[in-house]
Every structure is written in C-alpha cells, then in structure tokens.
Image (cartoon, rainbow, N blue to C red; front, top):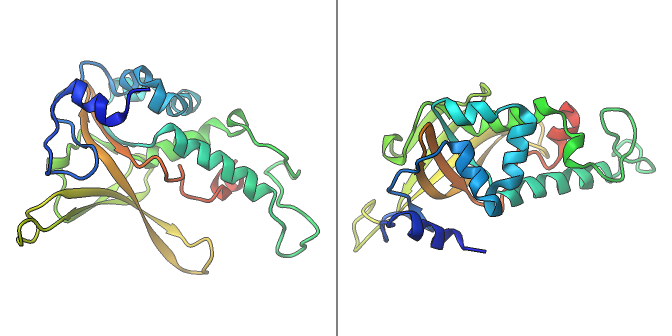
Length: 227
C-alpha cells in the first residue's frame, strides 16, 4: 500500500517545513472530490460507502464544497464504539445493557444498520459550503456553520522558527462544540487535526483528518440515540 506521504509526492511537490505532517498539496486534481476519494480506496473506501449510503454522491461530485474528510479507520472506530456502547451496563440498572432504537440489546451493529440520514447528518457536519483552501481561513481562528447547520471552527496554530513566533510550520484543526458525555451542562471543544490540506478537486477542497479520530465524535452514542 502506498503511503499517504508517498502519494503526495506523486501528485505534486510538498512545501517542507511549512505545514506539519504530510503537508500542503499544492496542485489540482482533475476529478471531483467524490471520484478522487473513490480512486483511493486504501484511504477512503469506507468513507465513500458512507457518502453513498447518505445519498450524497452527486453532492460531492458537483457542488462546491470543502470536506474535512475522515479516513476509513475513523468510521471503523465509530462502529466499534457503537457496539461497545450497546454492550455497556445501564447506570439505572447494571443488570441490563443499553438498548438500541428498537428497544433491543444488540450483539453487533453493522454499517448498514445505521440509517442513511445519520450518515448524511454526520458527513455534512464535516463539510463547509464553497471551496476553502488553507490560505482562505482566518488566522488564528474562524467560526463556521457547517452544511448540517452545526457551528464549527477552524483553528490554525503557527510554531516558532529560529526564535520568531508564528514563522514556522502551521497546523490546521477542525473544531466541534459538543455537549459533554460525562459532565452535565458542559460544552466540550473537540479538535480534529488535519494531516494534509488543500487537495483541490474540480468541485471542492479536501482537508484530510487524522485517521485516529472517531467519526461523529459521540463515543457511539450519537449513532444509536438518533438512529
């Protein structure tokens, strides 16, 4: 399997020292965002499955949209957490397990068990209307309204270089504001790290997120409570 860093070298040069991790993609890709992800099954085949299930194929093929795209592993982590959540004990009655939306404990929840509208809502929360390359984001932070209607924020951190603050490598993060899963009446700011920015396609821009994060950021609960 070709590494993501190697892939970037194939597509275009990378400005070393300017952006952390794999860097900024400086060229343009002559296909839609959807078709590009489909062409990179090693990174995005499960993401493409979610897009298809959500009925968003034409959206990511034709509309001008910026997607902070998860990788396959992020969706697998989310499904694993769904199953972990369903197997957990009820606080009110430890002898019973959490139940799904049908009222029954589940041993295994599969990809197709999640309703299309849930995939759609979650994917749209990672999406911004219009093309937004890295250079267009306000430093250090900019508030957004995602396609789903959720308030999000981009945050750029600049490291020092040769003693000059802000002159070194930059790191882009995409932030969500979510109700705490452990503390009542508390809103958590959850930041997901962008590892490669500015994959500019014919209809949009892709900023690839850290594969380790959980898609949806709900520890499995969001899929079940809304499903």
